[in-house]
Structures are given as structure tokens and as C-alpha cells.
Amino acid sequence: MAEVNLRVGTDYETEDIAYIRATGSRAVFICGKRGSGKSYTLGVIVEELFAQERGKAVLIIADPMGIYHTMVSANESQSDEVRQAGLLTEGFPVRLIVPGDPLACFGDAQIVNRLQTNGVEVTSLWINAHDLSADAWCELFDLEINNAMGIAMWRAVDTLHETHEHFNISDILASLRKDTRAKSTTVEALENRLTAAQRWGFFSEESTDLTDVFSLEHINVLDLSVVDAGTKGLRNLVLDIVARRLFTERTRMRRREEFGMETSLPRVWMAIDEAHQFVPQSRASLCKEMLIRWVKEGRQPGLSLIVATQQPSAIDSELLSQCDLIMAHKITTWDDINALDRLSATYMEGDLKGYIRQLNRRGEALLVDDETESVDTIRVRPRRSAHGGAEIQEKTASRSFF
Image 1 (cartoon, rainbow, N blue to C red):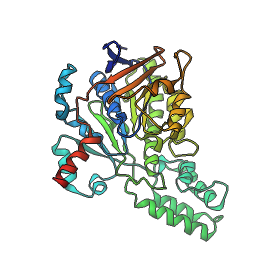
Image 2: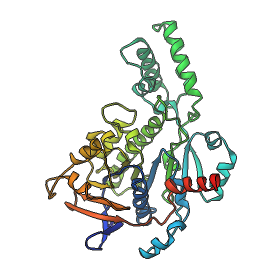
Image 3: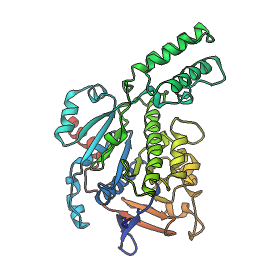
Image 4: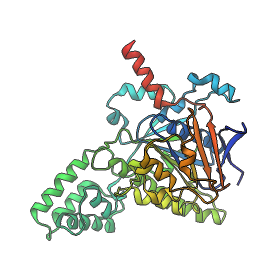
């Protein structure tokens, strides 16, 4: 495997270019308070990965804010800074993956047309009811598997898993109605929940083949902003299914690679912004267990994970402890500083909180790399592609008030 080094910025003390080694699997943690640049930095890493790994690895961004489709456009607003860094502004090929029908999700054909006019390839991701285990269906509806509703739901889904390769919500309803051990009131309550699930808009007769939807020639943006962020945890549901299927498929492909056989899914890099929504501290979520497994067991099957958040204290500590690279922008709350400080390593000259307090300049970040056992303060390089996190708001404001 060829050496992969990602240019992420410049060392503040030496002015040397700062690189991240990405030849093997990595677990990367990016943090910073609101407006400090953590989403911008995530984009820098993805740009570098695409430039060096295009056609060799699948790059996925789980985007709960709907801002990364802008990577299709060049960063004209910082063209001078980009040139001073010895780079060129450039848009990248972006495939926007929408759970369900894009027209229904955006509710506006003009939005879809504008995305496509800008060069974004828009495609659908469909989920089959079979993709969720019996336990996951219970967790989705917050059902205890030892009470009447949980038992009935688990039994109905488990029976279908044993007899069907694919099944629909209507099949679950039919299985419930045939269950002579379930009370009519229990069945009726579950019918209400499943009927509501049919309106979520991303269930289909068959699930999408991930090797078809995730392209080696694009930055794949999984747009979770179109999915309800409410109490049902639908964004977690979609991400759990994607992560679980990728993990299973890459484990299988790794065995083929060991014997020199062709594979349909190469190595995967998945970046998750606002990661505290998906791997929360002190509470469960549908995808938490799977994502922790990615960072614990992903090295062998070639799975890398990047998580970004403005709240380090809100991320599960088990996941954070497995990250071997940290890029920390300025944070100010004590809870977040203490959460980051717990990741201090023996090779450091002091605690992480001491380094964090010294971050004051815009675009500044602390780079902590376990592979090289190094701690450096860097200036993150300018993005070559457009950053949606700030620019969309500025353009909207200029249209509205001036």
C-alpha cells in the first residue's frame, strides 16, 4: 500500500507543513466550540483523502446539517489565501445520498434542480424493514423486550427474519395480527406505531445495494438533514444501518483480499459531523454500539472513522478513548475541557487542557497524533472547495437585509 500523508496545515513554530499519516486505518477526533472551525477542518481532511485515495477508498460524510454538498464548488471567497498556501481552488465531485425520494425529502423540485445544476449528483438510499433486527425495532419505538408490546414486536420481526430475505412494514403488521398470544390492545398500539413508520419515506421493497450508491469517484455525502431529528432517532437509524452493512461487507471483503481475490468494496473512510447526536455520553442510541465497534475493530477490515463535535463532553468516552488522532480547536466550557483533558497521553509534556488554553488565533488547532507521539499547534490550511457552514448563512443574510 502506497504511503498516504494528508496536508492539513502549517506548524506555527517551524512553518513546516503539517501532515497526518493515513496509510492505514485511523480514528480521528475533531472538536472546537461553535465557529472555531471544526466542520471546516473536517472538510480539509476529506479534500486531502479524496485527492490521494480517489478510486482506492470510499469516502463518506454523514451530514446532519446539510452543508457539505457545497464541496462541489471552488472556494472563491478565500482564493487569495488558497494561492498563498500554494494550492488551487477546486470543486470536487459530490454525490448527495438522500434517504428516500429526494423530491419528497426537500419538498421542492427547484432545490433538487439547483443541486444538479451546480454539479451535485443526487441519488436515493432505500431501507428495507429486514435491515433492522428485532432488537432494533424495539429500540426504535422505545419498547422494553420484557413487556407486552416489546415481546409482541420482537416475536413478529424475529419470525419474519427466519422466513424472509426481505419484508415490509405491512408484513410486520400481518405477523402481529396472526399472533394469538398478543392482546388486541397490544396489537393496536403497535399498529399505530408501524403505520406512522410507513410515512417516514425511506422504507422500500428492497434496500439499496451500498456498493451501487457509494462511489469511489465522488465524495459521498449522506444527507441526514432531511431526516427528522426528533425523539424516534431516525437519523441514528439510517446511520446504524449504513455503518452496520459497511462493517459486515468490509469484513467479508477483507477475507477475499487476503487470498488476492477481487473485491467490490475497498477501504472506507466515514466522517460524522455533530457526532454527539450519534454517540452520546451516558445514554443509548441506535448507532452507538456499531460506531464504537468501528473504532475498536475497524483496523483489520480497513474502516476509518472521523468524528467531529462542538461538545467533547457529550461524546461517549469509550469512543473517544479509541481515537488515535485529535485535532482540537478552541473550547471554553469546563466540561468540554475536562473531557478532552482525559485523553492526555504519557508522551505529552503537560495535560491537554494546558495546550488548549493557549489556542487563541483563528484557524489554530492542536494536533495530537498517537502514531508519531507528537503534539503540535498548527494553522489549518485553507479549504480548496467551498465551505457551506458559513457561506450559506452570509449569502442568505445579504439577500434578506441589504
